[in-house]
Amino acid sequence: MTSTGTSTGTGRPWSCDTFAVTASRSRLGGTILAKNSDRPAREAQPLRYLPARRGHGKLQLAYLDIDDAAETIPHLGSSPYWCWGHEFGLNAHGVAIGNEAIFTRDLAANAARHRSGQRVEPGILGMELLRLGLERSESAHTAVQVMTDLLERYGQWGAGTRSQDTATAAYDNSYLIADPNQVWVLETTGRRWAAKAIDQPTWSLSNEPTLREDWTCCAADLAEWAHTNGWPTDGERLDFAWAVTDPEVPLQVSHIRLQRSRSLLKDLLANSSIGFGEARRVLSDHYEDSFLQGPKFNPARPDFLTLCMHDSTAGFTWGNTAASTITVLSAQGTPVMWWAPTTPCTSLYLPVVVHPNGVPPLLSTAGTGRDTGPHPERAEEDRFAEDSLWWRFQRLLELVAGDELGSAYPERQPVVRSAFDPLQNDFLAEAQKLARRDAEPAAWAALTQSCTQRAAAAADQLIDKFA
Image (cartoon, rainbow, N blue to C red; front, side):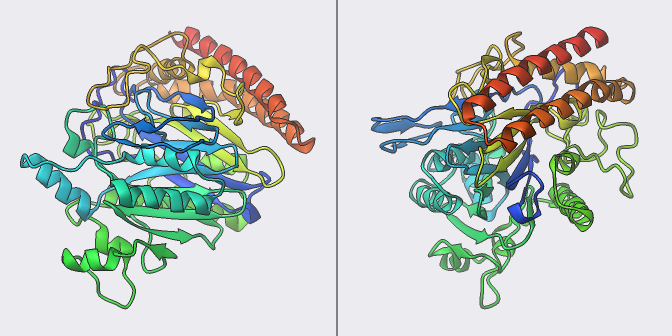
């Protein structure tokens, strides 16, 4: 993390890590879907509640207009301040979705055409497709169908960050899609896709395709498309990742993080099921207790890309973890999104539910650039605003680092945790009481209000202390 926010978001978006834990191996009373959303430094990502929408004929997205649904499903969305779509979200039926940038041969072909001056047909952004899935789906399987139908009809292309360099800022997408009963992986390349219903305890995603020959279903013309374009198609069943991955894009920066997430989850499951502490441990990881022994100096001066991402003065990390979530999808109780602004190692997770009163204005407010989207090439730069919890935690993150070299992090980060960890335990205990008595969403919304106020007060005290 740099105190000046030097990352511009114009580099290739090596970003985000997502994992799911099925209900049978969860201690939280349901399926877990967790994600770190990594974005350019200082790009605010507030949490919004979106009520049901009715009667719209056309829906304006960043690059095109599409037919709207007759009625949409209320949901929560954690979104870059300019974006109509979401990095992750939870709807009223307990469907949760998180996305990942991936780099495919289709994407490379579109980028080459764009750079040569040819017109590339505009499409849906991956974050927009995620929101459309939430708005129109009552189950994870339905979301897969909705999203793939839209993908085949409209395709995907456009800048995924606030950038004038569309070709560099564009990416194809993979998704983890979960409900209380099922988890699906959906991976895409241009207008085509493959999907898998997960039949194992966990699944992790990073910035590379993970489906091989094990997909459950795929686009009808996927194999024909691969063959026509001369992609690898050996074998009776198409190896999706091998066929579609752009060979010109190095995988080491994504594959190490993917394997780290898989390894941590495997080790944790060998000893126990996964609870809140274990999920947070994965999301906060900087390779501690590994052969790397964490960064040589500290996470705020990163040597490599970690699950809990910090901006690098060298620019190779692209940005920070802008928001983190541990979402619990219970078949009996109220689905709960535990949402943390900025990096997990310097933040607090707040319990939020799909309810009109579930997102206090302090959580849903960006900075000065609010409501400037949805077109990423025309959005205004966002800056600090006092009424934004996200920006308060961003200020705290910068103060914990101290300077561009992260000189103060080793001393100040433990101070943050000593202040936040007891408060986090209080939030968890209060949430467990509501879960045990199967409280109504209104009671959860009241808890969100209380936790938000206490988190803001604790952050302000630390800001005053470090400033």
